[in-house]
Amino acid sequence: MLMRKVPVFVPASPWGLRLPQKFLFLLFLSGLVTLCFGALFLLPNSSRLKRLFLAPRTQQPGLEVVAEVAGHPLAREQESPPNPAPAVPAPGEEDASSQANARRRKGWLRRTHPTGTREMATAARSSGSAALRPQEPSIPFSFDFHAFQSRLRHPVLGTRADESKEPQSLVRAQREKIKEMMQFAWQSYKRYAMGKNELRPLTKDGYEGSMFGGLSGATIIDSLDTLYLMELQDEFQEAKAWVEENFHLNVSGEASLFEVNIRYIGGLLSAFYLTGEEVFRIKAIKLGEKLLPAFNTPTGIPKGVVNFKSSNRSWGWAMAGSSSILAEFGSLHLEFLHLTELSGNQVFAEKVRNIRKVLRKIEKPFGLYPNFLSPVSGNWMQHHVSVGGLGDSFYEYLIKSWLMSAKTDVEAKDMYYEALEAIETHLLNVSPGGLTYIAEWRGGILDHKMGHLACFSGGMIALGAEDAKEEKRARYRELAAQITKTCHESYARSDTKLGPEAFWFNSGREAVATQLSESYYILRPEVVESYMYLWRQTHDPIYREWGWEVVTALEKYCRTEAGFSGIQDVYSSIPNHDNKQQTFFLAETLK
Image (tube, rainbow, N blue to C red; front, side, top):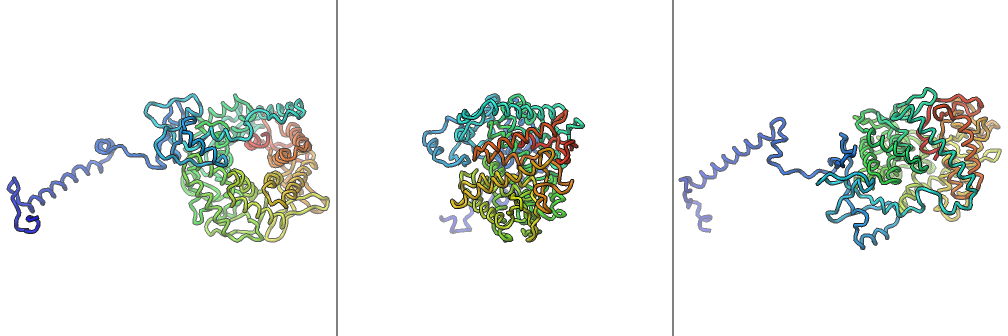
């Protein structure tokens, strides 16, 4: 205390230096040391020197490298990895209380919040074949696949017990025929176009197209779940092997955000949930991250095209690049919530929740959702409303978001039923011949036509009828049946018994195309999709009969020597093929 109070009392150091001199000397010495050692980190190629002096850094979220699994091709890829989530215990390692908590959770989508260090779930746990390298962590994993699988209502594979009452010989023969069609489509693709996006069966070669930004194998990834569900095990293993060894994401082209999401990410997610194979989960998350730049707009509404290398824009049909399309930005919700579920990265869920926020705030004409929205201003660009092309899957994703959430996503439920009421009020019509159809709306003026793409709506309305207001349920079930019947009529009134791309209700003609440019059929699934939903809900045999009519027509008019092809005019009994086997034919129509 005395020395602090009396400044003049400054003892000499052992070197003969007083305190101020000692202080200056130490200051000079510390500066010299800082200069010398700091220079090491400014020299070129100094990473080796850094490792001499710095402890290994903990990886930051979004920078983790995929853990290398012995012999696993994912470990060898030079791609940016997904953002991981905290790990959960491997099956059978949870304590009794955690198992009890898991049983009390509703729904099959649930988040896990581990509180401490736990054993990482491994890719080997899913495949049973790969072993981890010593002292290397596995890929962080937040989804308990085995718990998910245990909560399914019915087995994924095989025949349900309640089908024993059906005429099994006929049903099995029909199923085997469709499996044969799938095998033929797959083997033709494999022989002539393996690794390409689509098969061209007439010229017996592959087609890449411009929608996928350099990504390849769209048919393979879109077909994974169909191959698995049909128990075509050899073909499924061929597809899986291609994904493991040849599906690379280091591409730099321009891709449709919507098409990549529904065909690639949707295909990979479906395959993961069916099998638990890690390769599908990891690829889906990595590809999802490559889509995020599309959301870099003032409103957060994504542009239609993502440039895997730089900027983004919209396809030509979206008004000179200034608009985003309702069916495209409105059909991301299911996949992006699953990407968050499987990665722990909240950015995917945040992106699609923001889309909902924008749509909830914006004024809607008569409660209807127009098809074009500016991603800059957040305003509608024109008042064209359609439940067919440009609008269709937005409505489908609303009701399925409600169901996927174990009926907890009330926002999706409200948006769906509000939109359906507006559609029923302003777009629904009955033709003079008694056919119910959903017209298109252009600023208050109706186009009395319905597109093939709109024919999914029969199945959608049937699916949502159960959770409608009680006084509306019977009405929606009847409406679903009426719309599905109208779509069947568009098939029945053609020479090929296949439906046109669009059909009209005017000038005394009903449920037929009025011009050649709308008379083509490209192996679309929407009509048979509604048949399937109506069959599941009613078990009326008419829907199976109508489905078999489609199978017969496909065999007669669309099957070629080397695969299936769309036709250019459904009203001509002599088919003129378009030389393309669409990925969705395998992914949806045959399924």
